[in-house]
Length: 124
Image 1: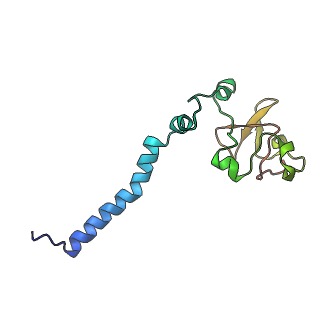
Image 2 (image 1 turned 30 degrees about the vertical axis):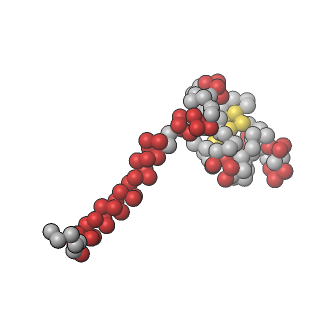
Image 3 (image 1 turned 90 degrees about the vertical axis):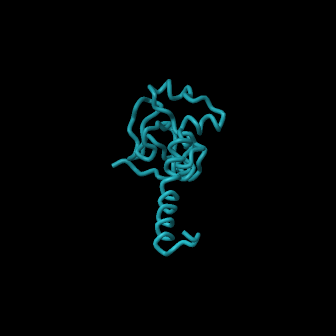
């Protein structure tokens, strides 16, 4: 070969590079983006105490990106826009015990019964 790339070679290389660009973030997130890694980076213990108390299901971290997006607070009294509404009276809430429950917005995590978020929806 004389060192020049023909059109077929260019497109073959382009497709390979595009494939790597699409797949690499998923692979890197899987390898380096685990919850344990994120907790370690924040300085928290890999298995925090709230998860142990709740039977393995962790509480929502108010600093989590989803929690911030929906303005989740653990105490509805601290959110003026809650207007007295809280998780217990929300249609997305499923009661676990007197102080906490599950929420379809935060799959796999518990929310405080007195919490509130902007996705609050009146129970039917």
